[in-house]
Figure (cartoon, rainbow, N blue to C red):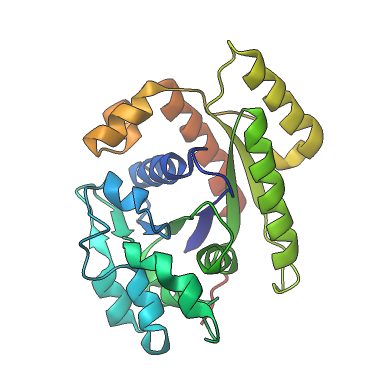
Length: 264
């Protein structure tokens, strides 16, 4: 299984859209995909019509039962969606209490990695949707993933969020035994505005090959697909934004096809 994390220490940059779009397109290519919601707001879970305020079990359960993780437990938490090949490990608002619970408790940083190891052979790809702040949940995602995807809205303020997560990544490297590849993905690009054009140019000038050569355009079809609870590639297969994510998936999959590592 390949494990990707979608993260940025700024909200509203397209993290959940990126996770859902890539997951949906991967299933259309025959992959078995597990989406993992690590955001206490539960946007990913809400996308598929699950209520984070009412779920009896969720990713929060993994942290509660971290000393007793098993294949059967993790499997029970995984929810099948209405879309073939696409499963979800939903979030609940209880995740918001983890920072307080983490104080003085060992083993909180590798919970997601160990949980994914229990279902490693059941999926081809897991995509982790992260909260927009540094904490236990993002640390878990960075520890578990093999590829970090950083959506960056093409506007000036979004560059600050990028600087913060790259600083976080630098700190995490000290505790990892290997480098974590990352890819900056320009999102919500509008070639008609000077702000978008200028920001995209700055991304490419400042970060070079770490920036995906393409960009995801502004596309109202994403909002409509979310409202309908349908993966974008099924809602509007010919939309410009979907074509952008299709190109991104093709860019990512060959790079990660050789990844075989797992954490036991």
